[in-house]
Amino acid sequence: MEQAQVRELKEEGSAGSSNPQEVPLDQSARKDPESPMNWTNARKWTIIAMVSFITFLTPLASSMFAPGVPEVMQDFNSSSPTLSTFVVSVYVLGFAFGPLIVAPLSEYYGRAIVYNACNALFVVFNIASAVAPNLASLVVFRFLDGCAGVAPISCGSGTIADLMPPETRGVAIALWSLGPLFGPIIGPVVGGLLVEAKGWRWAFWVLSIVGGVASVIFCFVVPETYAPVLLRRKSARLHKTTEESTSRDNIPYVDQHSPEGGGEFVESSTQPHLFSQALIRPMKMLLLSPIVALMSTYVAALYGLLYVLFTTFTTVFSEQYGFSAIGSGLAFLGGGVGMLFGLLYAASLSDRAIKARIKNGQVPKPEDRLSLYLVLPGALTIPAGLFIYGWSTDKHVHWIVPEIGNAVTGFGMIVIVMCVQTYLVDAFTVHAASATAANTVLRSLAGALLPLCGLGLYEAVGLGWGNSILAFIALAFAPIPVLFARFGEVLRVRFPVKL
Image (cartoon, rainbow, N blue to C red; front, side, top):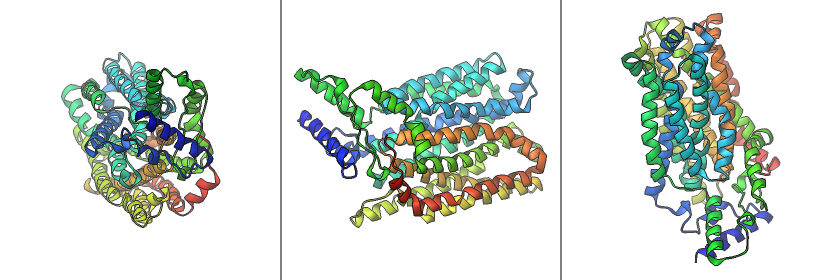
C-alpha cells in the first residue's frame, strides 16, 4: 500500500515535467493519507499556532531592549547616536543574511531540523547578549541572534503551504504574518517594564527563558511537513526494506511549485546538485522573478519606514511629551491596535475570492489575494498615518493623536504584508520558503539600515516634514499592489523562473 502511494506520487510528479500546470504538488499530495494536507484540522492548527508563536518571539527580540539603550550606552561609556540605533537594528540586519541559508536548507533537509537548530541558537545568542562584556560583543551577538531568529519568518509560509489548501490559507497567513510586525511593537512595552525594574540585561534573560521553553515544546509539537522530504524518506524506507538496488541519491526530487507560479518539475541525479539549486533559489527568485522583486521592494520600503518609527519612538515621545522608559514603551501600542484591526479585516476577506472561484468551478489565481478592497485601503492608510503622526508630534498635539496616526499606519502595514505574503505563497507553494526568504532579505536590509538616518532626518527638517517625506515614499509605492492585481498574471506567465 505504502509503495503504491509513493509510486503514484512519483508518476504524477513525472507527469508534471511535461505539463506542470496539470499536476500541482499539493493536489497529488492530498491523495496520500500520510500527507500533511490530510492531517486533522486540530493538528494543523496546533502546528501553525506554534510556528506563529516562534515567529512572534524572534521579532520581539528585535526591539525588546530598545528602552534600555540609554542605559546600555551609559554602561559601555558610549555617546554615539549611530551606535545607539545600530545596536537595536543590527538584529534586523541578521534577518537579511539568515534567510539565504535557512530557507534553502528547509527545502533540502526539511523544515523541522532547521526550526529546531535555529531555535536552539536563538536561545544561545540571547544568553550571550545578556552577559556581553562590551558594546562590540553585544552588536555581534545581536547580529548572530538575528541570523538564527529569522528561521520561522523564512520558513513559516512554507509550513503553511505544506498544511493548508489555498481556500483556507488566508487565515493561517494572517496569524503568522502578525509576528514580524506585532513582535517589535510588544517588545518595547515589555522591555520598558523590565529595564526600569531589573536593567537592560534582563530583557535578554527573559527572551532566553521563554525561547528555551518554547523550543522544547516545539520539538514535540511540530513534525516534518515538507512533502518532497517526506517522499524521499518514504522512498528510502521502502528501498531499505525491499533491498532494492536503487541509491537514495537517485530518488526523484519533486521540485515543483504551484502552476500559477510557472514552475517546472526538476529531476536531478545527485544530491549535491539539489543542494546547490536550493542555495541559489532565493536570490534567483529575487533577481529573475518580477513578482518577487517588485513585491519585495515594496514591502522593504514599508518595513524600513516602520523601523524608522520603531527606533525613534523612545526619543520622540520622551522629548516631545516627557514620557518615561515605561511610557515610551507603551507608545508602541498605538500601532499594535491598528495591526489587530488590520488582521481582522484582512483575515476575513483574504479567502473570500478564492472560495468564490472554487464554488464556481474555476481555478483560483494568486492575484485573487490582491483584491482592491484589500490592497487599496492598506496602501493608502500607511501614508495617511505617517502624516498624522508627523505633524501632531511636530506641533505638540496631545499624545493620543500621534497614537491614532500610528494605529492607522499599523492597519495598513499588516494588510499589505499579509496580502503580499499570501500572494507569494500561492504563486510558489512548494518554494514558498524561498520566495519569503527573498522578501525577507530586502525588507530586513531596509529595516536595519534606514533607521540609521531617522533621527538625522528629524533633526534636519523636523518631525512634521521628516515624517511627510516617509509618507510620500509610501505613497509612491502604493500603486504596486494595485497594478499587480491587474497585470500580475501576465508577468508570471511571461517571466517564469526555472527553480
